[in-house]
Image (cartoon, rainbow, N blue to C red):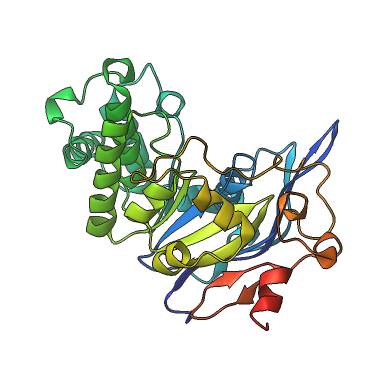
Amino acid sequence: MSENKLMLDIKDLTIYYETDAGVVHAVEGLNLQLGRGESLGLVGETGAGKTTTALGVMRLIPNPPGKIKSGQIIFNGENLLDKSEHEMRKIRGEKIAMIFQDPMTSLNPVMTVDKQIAEMIKLHKNVSESEALKLAGDMLELVGIKRERAKDYPHQFSGGMKQRVVIAIALACDPELLIADEPTTALDVTIQAQVLELMKELKTKFSASMILITHDLGVVAEICDKVAIMYAGRVVEYADKESLYLNPIHPYTNGLFRSVPAIDEDVDELPVIPGLMPDPMDLPKGCAFHPRCAIAEAICAQEQPKMCDFGNGHCAACHVMAKRHGL
């Protein structure tokens, strides 16, 4: 991807949590790119390192016990890991905003919602209190909440409405990059659909790039342009949505797709990936997926596979598939 089209370039990012019980290898040598205006779906099981990656981009890894051990996070040509905390505070909210997983814990229960949105606006824009509150009302209307409800408290809203307020806060300063960490997990299916549709509309309206963290391959199909599959702290497959859904390459990606129920098939039991995610304190040597992989060979237990391009930017890290394709 050319430099002027590239917004985010994560290079060899490694993040550990150093605990009394041992070192948790949360993110291990991760590489990822995101272009301007693109939506990237970050998919994987719980514990794959998706949220840690997002917190790393925001420079919000709790320290202690978390530490960014190595790598670069290049945002608009500048390495965020070289920025001071003061500089990062200017970037968070204004340039990069994050929608957290649970709106219940993201909102202050003793502040009205308009004041919470206005607080973000005042942090990054030179406006008066009254102007900030007016803009907050505008943002609420933009996410489908009537202005008359601006003086309500979070407990007076449903789960879906709270998530809309959180989205309003995240978009209040028109960020260039929006990170959404499982924004629909706590919502029922109907409200999920409404929130996802809203996010699609707002992404287009604000021309923002987006990283969507999710377990749900259906959500990714609905919203994202590119998809990165994560396993044990690494990206194991990366491609545009169509290529990945029509031709998944990595055995782990294939396992994820097989475990999704098909609406037109009547089966008693869905195929599952055997075993469990490896202990991040004790990752297997070689490919971390090899103990669960049906096509693993001897080399898989010895060497970490390199990311190979299988054509048109569809990349995967698998010894066996690379050999089959002559790479």
